[in-house]
Length: 281
Image (cartoon, helix red, strand yellow):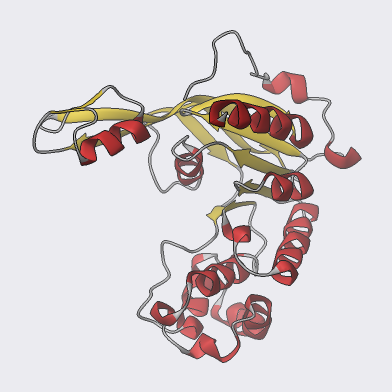
């Protein structure tokens, strides 16, 4: 799918200089993304025309007419994205699967290097905090310690927060079981609870709030609000537009690696919903 060329949803960062989410004064910039490109390089065994077997699936994801499986194929997952985020903002990110949302977050977190452009962060970014360091073979208890240390907490601080983390996650005595034994929902709740135990300068959440019951989602929203109010910046990737609108005053719409709209969540989500409905119809 593609967005018609005549539709111009792009909003320059300067256009948002007077934008005050929920009437709140925002702080200094916490993040600057400047003309960011992220390119993946894919190796394969032979050249296959699109639509032939599994490579056809890959083609649809990459939006390419052919997939070069014998040399090197470059795929631009993020293409020329620029925006500024400020302390005290909660920013949603929406887009269809494969649009580049998660790649953008990983680049901001420093987990993958930009191919071109720059990312400037004041402080330490946290992509749902600790996914890269948690180990499924270890108990939840051990992973709480590992995750807390990865967030910059001291061992004493992690121990002091341990009971609150377990209570927030709602997994009870399962904290003493290996994380490999957890359901996906239990794992997501524990990851969120660990991440939210600290107050990162930039917290990025990728679909975490899709798990858990209504009570957990309310707790998560309250914690996100608290982090934002303590002068942090929160990014939330979600396919639930209602969740994005309830938590985030500002939203970025990413499509085919590009930022096509940046503005108040109600306006961006309405435009994105109309686009998806038109494509599905």
